[in-house]
Length: 285
Image 1 (cartoon, rainbow, N blue to C red):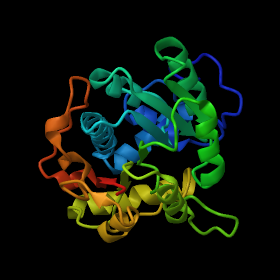
Image 2 (image 1 turned 120 degrees about the vertical axis):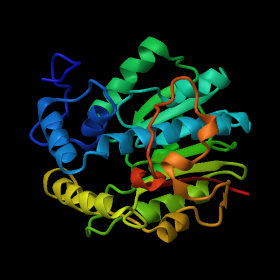
Image 3 (image 1 turned 120 degrees about the horizontal axis):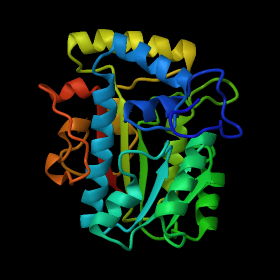
């Protein structure tokens, strides 16, 4: 049984751990079941810093949203938003600009269900929405975003794709469709829009972190879903010809630390590379 819900949500597979639910557990959330917590504990026994890496990514998301709101962004589309926990995009944006609009998207039933509950209790249906969708289907997903009426995809917005693309997005032939899908989203975004992205890397890590991460990826590949780690050059390529904001592609823990807010998770690393995840924000000219 989950720590929060009394009964499993229809469509939730409790025969194996879920990426979204395990990540929720790392962040201190309650939308996870025993199978997710047991797997999470297995991960942390092999990779003790794993929970802090997840929280450093969440802190990056907070800072990126606050930064973009200060730049005038009022529309956000969060693909792979996961289970709502530790401050959601609309909550962070509303701290700075109460007129911000957000559409959350995930393909995990539990993430969508809990997001809907959160928005029913603490959201504004005219400014916030959640839909079930698949990153690998850009055109269908973008139409669903437009159908919500919450954001106008024809006007500048921020597309958030954080901690998603290191999870393999297989096509019918097993080939990872992540980069191809991101390229299509870049095409559809109107000029003046931004893309916020983070993903695990195998490059530039401390030796012990690299060794532990390798073990963890094997655990995920065997028990949950296959992962794809990318180099810094490959992650930069995901931004295409968008103009990267300073400081470019860097560790999640090192991206604009001054943008932290009162609800931003605090994670201290002796070396930012211990975060194991690279991130960046770029603007479409």
